[in-house]
Image (cartoon, one colour):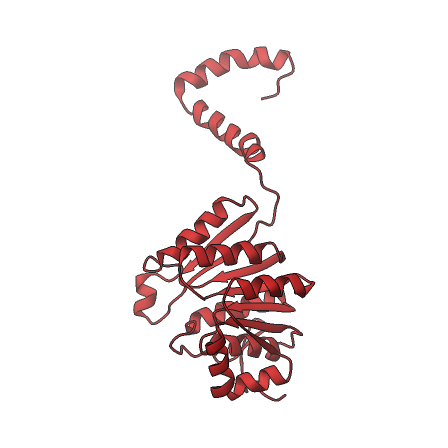
Length: 252
């Protein structure tokens, strides 16, 4: 197949194009993580916000191709960035020509808003790696979330202290959506010293219904009761009154 990388690595049924840690791109470790997530979802619609030199973009297309996933990648960036990619990167031209990739030029979030309105189907997988500030990341999360299919992932790059706007945007978004959860996938100092780096955060829907009322009734109340009963005085009092409650039909 034209444009498909040769000899991908296969791990647990997942075929990974040999990841390289190019600058201005995800690390090799992050690319491996992304490849596994893509294969778990087998997405039809993949969105990348912030194409830059299209290194991650073409990697996503390669993951779909080598794993025979019939999906398409849409990449968003400014007009001059997209024009440079098309002019200087033959792989981008080939992938657009065969329908694996579509670059969308123009400023975010306007281009994303228009795209989502016209798409007519949910997004399966998205990568946020454009402007690293609070308002940009927050608006992109809000837009993508409304169109993300159940079980889909939004991967946010640079969930780090030095790009604190990204962290604040992700944390604020999750705190305001009880059905959302964030899983940071971060390397520690020892891993980075060994050349293994990850600075990603995964945002997805909880796999179960969630509400503060249900949490309080099902988990907080039993936890409070257990904590109280660990106190000797409370436990002694409870042993005296428990038979009374048992006689009136109060089970616990």
